[in-house]
Length: 218
Image (cartoon, rainbow, N blue to C red):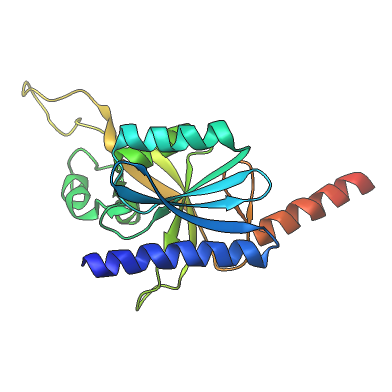
């Protein structure tokens, strides 16, 4: 298991460096002990950019320091999580399915339940720090999935206890602190460009340039 984790972390680093280089970015991979005894991985992008690789559990406080230090030193900062299904991108579908069956998640359908994740503190911090609620993940190659960068937008999930009738005590309706629902999924296996707060897919930059050109013609 540990060997597989190490392999995925190495693949993640090499993949993103390669895709940045394909877009003409000057990318330098770095592996360094900066928080405790474990190795942090990131990619410096000239002249003033950095891609932080969240490929292990940091804990919320250490992760905040990791991100804050990067933002203090670099103009462009992107964060990419390792989509391993264990540390990050943890499915909550099994437990959520039970609660969706006439219980507190009854207003969510099967498709929604499939998209429910239990986010770690690092992911929640990044979601709330993002103006769009978007996170980006490195998706390792598997039998079902191709190696790529996955981008999703996260929304909150609400518990509704109106199914508890009569005089029985029931909790107040509330927003989950752990569960989030992903939507607007995009996958990209082409060149990557470092934008101000995320990795930009090469076709997105082309679309922006085209739109700007049309605006100038108007």
